[in-house]
Length: 271
Image 1 (tube, rainbow, N blue to C red):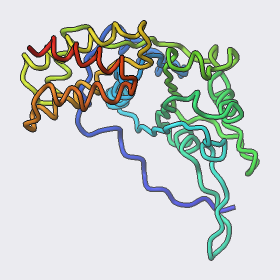
Image 2: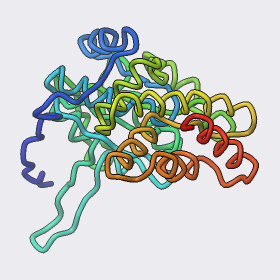
Image 3: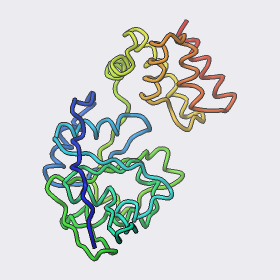
Image 4: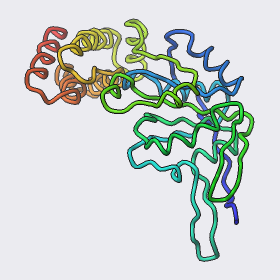
């Protein structure tokens, strides 16, 4: 078996990814990394889970490998596979294996979207063994110093669809993230979109009102990400109501009654 030569992994970011802490999540993550503990980030869509991981990879000076999980994600996609080339057969590491070899942070985004038989391969990495068995090569790979496994999922959305097995959940330190407080969220929207402070504050006020519609049938509430998109459109000259309808209301629902209620809230916020 021949292992291909890989270029060294780049560090997560040369500049600090902008992140506003909402609690003690930074200190908690640092302690978990120092102890080699796997971390599970729980929170609604667009609340900043991915940005938080990017920020922590930068802060800890570790490379970051991110995998967007989906229904067809197989164990081979994570671990690797043999490739046939003109000069023979070579083994190609998957993203998880490469992170284990090189001591990177491996972030599995929306892990419950992956098949259960795929999630099982994580188990030996999430306890005291810190091992990755590679059945196809017979290799038993010990995690390099600095390796950390981080997963995320949206428990509210997944509750009626999929969930993690208890045997998997109990292998992680769980950190609950939520949308930032009003002042922090306005600061984030202003910083990330470039919109002025009064409009940023109004967008956050609108989001708070729309999030109250969760109990009236709205499956997903507006994320901070959507507010940033609306703010960016405003900066580029789109009228604020039109920006809100395109970037916030329309992505959330096609139900006429819900869309009508959200339109009313937009009109009431931007009088």
